[in-house]
Image (cartoon, rainbow, N blue to C red):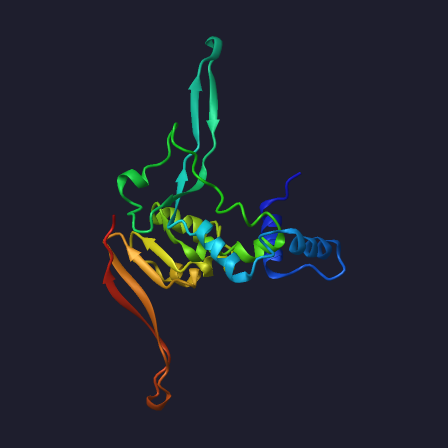
Length: 226
């Protein structure tokens, strides 16, 4: 039996926050992996470079595919096939406009299957989970097919645990973000709107001599979509 979603979430958070206790079977397996794995024996700098080459795909665009019920008549009898829907993601170039018609159309039969997972590295072992689970969020720009999809994915269904949403630094958005969404994500450094307006966050240090508190400013520039 597969654990339910809440159980899976707690397992993931536990893996990310802690290492196995010394003397436990998990700790012995941990030590064994460090000794035997060619990847884990590499210096951290080389491992990080490998992770970047694998996981830096450019842009992760989240969409939603509706459930479909298709009629078929095998042997003259009416029957319906149910095609599962739900959230899915596509990989686009970092400077590609995710709302261009060719990029934003919903998947149809015959299209390559949209991805439902970010990486095959993190489930391999606890060490790889700890080292790679946040990298797809940090290294790539993120976008959503529409404001409705973004608010449902991020705010309503809360698909991103705190570490993941804080790890997203670059977001492409069709509209200026509602303050509640920006605050909830928490780690945004760059926001690019559909019209090409690019907003880069800049922290202004406190000037205690003049009684000024630390503030945040957004520098404006323009990004050209491909």
